[in-house]
Image (cartoon, rainbow, N blue to C red; front, top):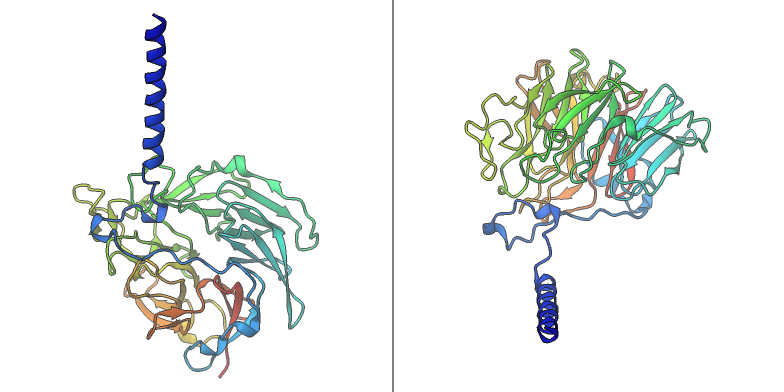
Length: 404
């Protein structure tokens, strides 16, 4: 019996050792951005391009390379905001800037010709979403919602943690956010798909929701939205228009990112079964995959990373820009020939028909050698009618103005 027990223990030890060896020998799981890559593209060298998360001095930003229609001018408005993305303007004129990879929220103060930058929050989990209402700054990270009351006058204002009230889903992939208060005073929040392409683990993903400012009264406005990180309200109809990213690893030219419009609640925009309104997914199958799917206002280019969108309502730009939509396309990585790296203008009827996409701000990329120096991310109109454009690559904000 003793020998049998010893033999059993030895066999068991060998079994554990073999299992451990086999486990170490296994190929580590693929990174999230490779999910959905077909075997035919397994040798592809395409990969996300790491952002620059250090300060870029103004002297190293080639602002003179930017091109716009006649009469427009680009100048550096602020620097020293590594990873700066979405912007929100406070009641007293301070500008708050969210980030993704670096985990910070910045405050920019305009001192009449020069801007200073300080860090409001740090070490958060992708706090891309910032919004301002009634003297309070709202910051939404993947796993946290914070409100800073009276922060423009009190730089040391302690945040109020509102996380529990918003029921944030736990998965991180595509769960960084753009947030904004709508004309109805409610806070609009997207929740991206937790994958490149997959059946949703629960229905709380691939949605756009809205809440009361205190986190109550949650409503789901739209479903099937893979990854919207930019939206604005049409000046005439007050309907929400939003950008949406198409999936990766379906080739260079499919699917497109899209510009979409929510004409009523409950619309389905297709994910994961249908892309750009008319392309069935090859991996996640469903009969009549695109039937009943809301059609986009405009196709914004394959893998172009269309982020911030803003309707122009100011008086500075020429009349043809009134109520037109400007869209920042940060630029592609999942494409053999890069696209995006610009700001385009979308002219469309108020009902979303007859959309035309035209270049507006170019020069961030060199087509000849496919190199780029900047990645425009978000837009914000200023009271004087000028437009601010954030550049995540350089941690800078540019001011676009017009004069005859």
